[in-house]
Structures are given as structure tokens and as C-alpha cells.
Amino acid sequence: MTETAQVKKVRLEELLPIIQEQLKAGGQVTIPVTGTSMKPTLVSGRDSVTLTRLEGSPKRLDLPLYRRQNGQFVLHRIVSLEPDGSFTCCGDHQWVREPGLRPEQIVGMVCAIQRQGRPFSVQAPGHRLWVRLWVGLLPCRRLLFRLAHGPAWLRKKLGRKR
Image 1 (cartoon, helix red, strand yellow):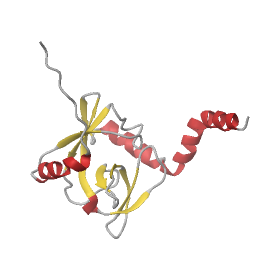
Image 2: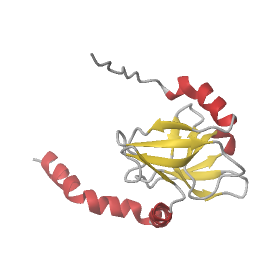
Image 3: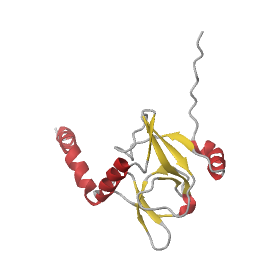
Image 4: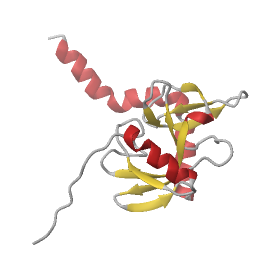
């Protein structure tokens, strides 16, 4: 007879004290990715990320898990650093920037990604090249998304007018 593992979904907020304790002790924590804001880099149901604690100051292109003022947890890329010590993030599948984030809001920093169970470092040269290219395209992402999704958007609009 084989045993089947039961999977229980737990909210990140419930795990936060355990995650913080593990990271504070110098450990790492791996969590699954949910949502679509980091596509195509991270895909819900396929990818997981490994977090480590923030060492020093956050840097441009880092991928922090942070908590918004409203309590929501977000995993978005740092696209700029501000002189006052704050930083601005944006999801890889978004074009709207989120400014005014503070280092105190960071829960952990992504140090590795597991894609279909195979891990790779976020410092891997191919990944770093992809990230630099994609963040460099941030000013024209809205147009890129419109072009990529344009035919479907147009069909949807035309279909509603009938």
C-alpha cells in the first residue's frame, strides 16, 4: 500500500514568522510562485523561488519578496534605487512601477529559481542577460504587450459592438 501526501495550502502570512526565523538564522526558504505579474520569468504552478535574507542594501535588478503597506506580499523586480534609500519595483509582466518601497518591507531576496524542479542561480549569466534586457525594455513594455495581445484585444472589442 502506498501513502499519498496531503497537500495543504497555507497563506504566506501564516508562515511569515517561520520564514523570518529561518532567514534570520542564515537559512533559506523555498516557496511556490503564484500569480501572473512576473511572467515570463516566473510562472505560477511551474516555478518556485528560494529566498535568503537581505545582505546590505537592495540592488537594481534584485528580486525581493516584500510586503506592501496593506499587508499584501509581492515578488517584483527592483528597477531603480532612489537617493532617499527607497526603491521602485515592477513585475516582469507589468509596466506600472511601484515607487517608495523601503528595505524594511523586504521579507527575503530571491537567490535561486526552481523551474520544473531544476534549480538555477539568479546570478547565472544567461538569467542576468535576460533580466537586463527585459528591464531595459520597461519603457516600451506597454506597447510590446499591446502588439503581442493586440489581435485578441481587437477581436474582443469588435465582438462587443455587435
